[in-house]
Length: 447
Image (tube, rainbow, N blue to C red; front, top):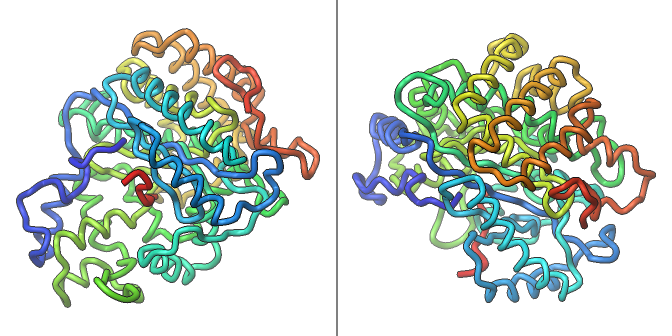
């Protein structure tokens, strides 16, 4: 959901070139990362792997990707079109006044993008991780050079996350200031607890380099392995503003930007330490926040980042619809809260995603009995709510088809991948709008 007001730099009360004190950082984060009010808008960010149309197991050369993306610069779109470090394509919708406006906008933009890629012999795949190829970086820029250097310190997961993963991210308003089903505190807690159910139900990344990893959402595993400082979150039962402000201050700085030459990559320097020993600016704070990748990221709105990319041309619609219904319809939100509340005990007071609940969701999907039971109840609540929030019959039927195919028998899309013989084309299958088979900050390629 493209919205400049969600970034710390949008406040306008501090010159972005002026050095900040520790207290000023906390005040800025508290005031801007959570914008409360009635939940009115929804957005989605869809990441896709780009592969050879007829032989997805073959790598796409950087030259062919560059030519295809150059052609896309001339395509009129409402969504922001960006490219991720490994060449993944991302479409980010503008804030929409309703679920259907969001779905219609992204569907129309995808309909415009796909023919251009097809003309270049390329196609999009809705998979949480690339099942064929080792990580290979497409974008060569100081930001990604520094990111790679930083993430390499925790092992190979960082490069895999940067270059071989894709997701469906749902963006929702933070909610009312007051308590209640649509209040900020409840929505913050629900996002971190219901998030584990969403991980399990939509897990779609069981393979890396052609082999099963033992996890149904390997993508979620990769995020966990890059470290709690980079991909962790505050405990969900804490007051959101203060907890997130402390997390931002105590998170390690990924890099210090330079106008010329490579960017500096400090070793374990937190932003709090930087304010005490250096002179970081508002622009540095803005950038620092953009390098934190928790499963729920406050950017004025709440960005839910835990869902794997989904199979089929239209499979992404299901998690967007289900998540929106469970958060923005008061009755469904209350039902989801009561459903997932018992699951919180499995978190053992550790924040997502580094707790047993999220680990079990990523590893086992809906074969986990408690997560399966919760998913059944949440999908039932979402299906009841979808007509109330204006969903069309086609969207409701898509959610019903997903429930029948996966949720009822305790499966997830990852199980389809695991069921296929090794080497089978994974790129072109999955449930569409009516169940039929269908075929992190990136660089803006339209500017």
